[in-house]
Image 1 (cartoon, each protein chain N blue to C red):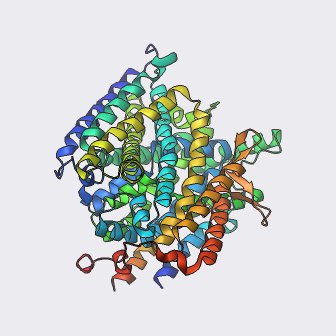
Image 2: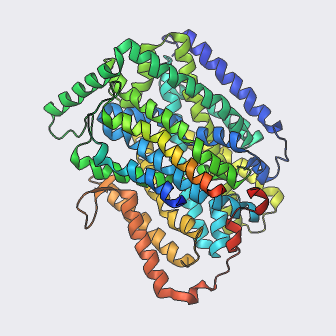
Image 3: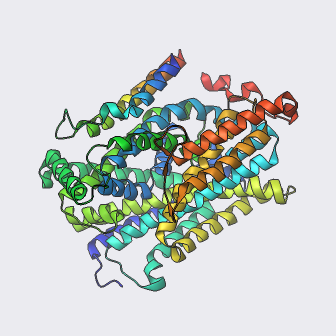
Length: 56
Length: 516
């Protein structure tokens, strides 16, 4: 489970064809840019979850 | 020389520089230890907790060159420059898994460098030398590029000179850096990293709020950047830039991100920053909070797009950040931002030179040349080597065209990836004999260099065999490296496992006390 939590953000970050698009925009940012920026804190949450599982 | 100097900005710049210089010398007394011991000078006594490690690694990995080069690539090509973002997303899950294992085994046995681990794990001196040599080779141009970053902002202040005087401010800054690194060791960049990181955060938060207000918002920024890329593409159908990636750029983008992430923690300076932590748990906590710096990096990358919206035209894209800052901010804040970038060069340059010096002393000099080197002499030698390494980087900037340094750093990434199997596989298995890993390394180094050299120029991406798409050269070479290592390991079989392994399976796990 720990490994799955760590692999998920990596796969999403490398699934470039999925986010290689101008739309939908958010606050003026094309999808490509805001999706990648949002993925950074999301990936940290996944690592935190893996860490919490480890502590149990 | 100084007739066009922006005096207000220069006073602020010099003022911050003076502050970190005092900190650099005073750092020797911070959490005092015996600085004549290489564990203290070169690794800060392994006493840095999660917070200090956060600042130290952030200061170490997100370098001045990054602040200059990533927006430069975005300015020139658009979306492709954003490969740095997925790169820094995938690097932390990887660190979370692997680096605490390296820390545990290094702490247990007193290793200071990655190559120390290799020697003990495989009992194979040539492999240790190969890993050490590759680390130093890849680090040297990286240090030189920190100087390029620093020189860009000094030029931005309005300093202009010819011949050797052109490099005068850089030389002064670097001599000061060399002296306090010599006297304080890793404590100096660790302490200065606090200032550097806070300054970079202030700079970038101001930039992402104030610049869009002046330029009419993010929508307008993306629209004018998009117009610029389509304009260039209309004039030159082969131009690969744009607001999103061309289909042919997808595989290069993905493989550059993946390969760069795998390469990052093979660099000696990244391992030094990691091993200086006080526990594997500190490293895990850092893997959760270090992405804060990645967010800053992603926002810094946006500066390249803002450059187009601000109508700035630069012949050398590496001038885009200094020029944008000059155009958008009052002089005193220009001085602050430039100081942030210049101090951002000092921290990694110091850690890189310390890491290269530790590696040379332990894994080349003591291992290959003078095994009788007493422990008391190690720190003395490492201090001296750290001076030589910095001098070498300075001379490289004096006498070598910048493009060479950039190409060498690019190659450095391809090379450093070739020690990935020895270090990372070694954290989990001893199935590979040292000789098999050495053969794989040699094939990867030669192959990676050959495919990077195309028609008189150096390129990061080639068409991969069998796949028929563009793949990062470092990864292509790594695949060849691993195939060779696996085949030779399988052929050599169990007989080759006789080489002594000083580590035990339990050495890689957290000690029970640290789990509590």
